Length: 445
Image 1 (cartoon, helix red, strand yellow):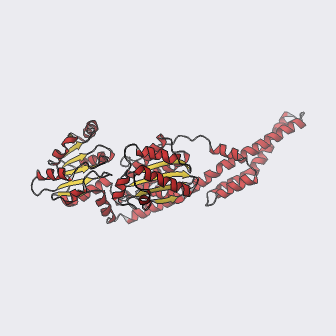
Image 2 (tube, rainbow, N blue to C red):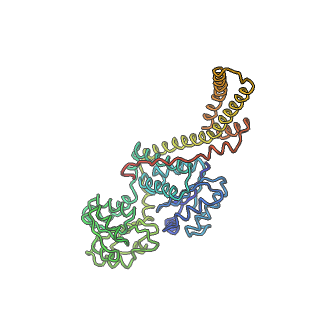
Image 3 (spheres, rainbow, N blue to C red):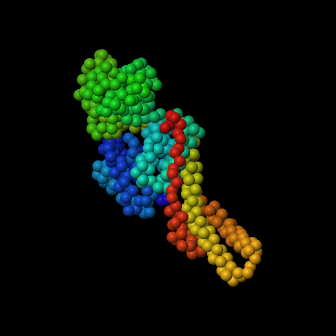
């Protein structure tokens, strides 16, 4: 497997560009299919969150893969290719595996150690499986990434080094408006991020929780699980005047809460009170002009990016997770290289078995009077001799294959024994078994 990762994230692109590049509606599926159909690509998966867009692909040509995937990402995101290219990063083979494992552990998140990324990676794998763009290689890779992420959270306190984006955002709001406990909160949206925000607010002890969503039924379902109140989406402006904190994450293509609406809501509030507004949407839900309004403290993803850079995570846990990632990358690479030689070994043993069968049939023709018991003993002896001759070299070649450059040993076997390439390909093309679901802890699911 020649793994290629191409993408952009909060580390390489400004929030404004990420906002314009955000994939909405059916665009993730269309991009995924287009990537899988590209000539150099055998398999493809897409990780698209508010802070990153990454294409993972098994490619047979590096440069062609980079070129084709860059063009596709520009086309489907709507960002000019030249502008996009300046912010793209590319990782290949072991470096690509290292990147994905780091992402799974939360090392590459805006808030170091946040566990939400594990659920997002699981969703990315689910989408690729559903759309039939992930084969054996990406299935194994993402399954292992999920295991590595789970290991990092269970063996270290990396999740204490930072908080989820929701918690981090609420803390930034509380820096100015005071603790969330006892406040009235309005959540706009009922998707995964909004649901997480609503649940976090409920646990934090808000005195009243209000949900508003364009699809009223989804708002009702979320409210029922949290003992919250639902207001029609059209009444959001009225609800803001009666709340202390607004969290918005709708997935809409344009601004949902305008500066004029929020200014009108603030005018109806008690004099001197401060309205906290947390915008977790990408593209943003809240007009940036709200930053200039009196009586409002707006925290958006751009603000969070700046705050996160100034926040020091627990260095000891980060270092421990980095060591876990390094160890897991080495083990995954060795396992992949060893697995790559298996079809050659299987084909070699199949060829040897065929030679033995042919020679035994010839012996039967030459010595038809041979006693059946002697014939069976002779056949068993020949098979044992062949097995013993092949045992040491095949075991050793599997060991050597786990080391860097191990693929050359498979090539040497194929060349020395003149193995039929079609026989090797037949082993590689064996059916892929269904991936085993990875069970995550409740707080990471």
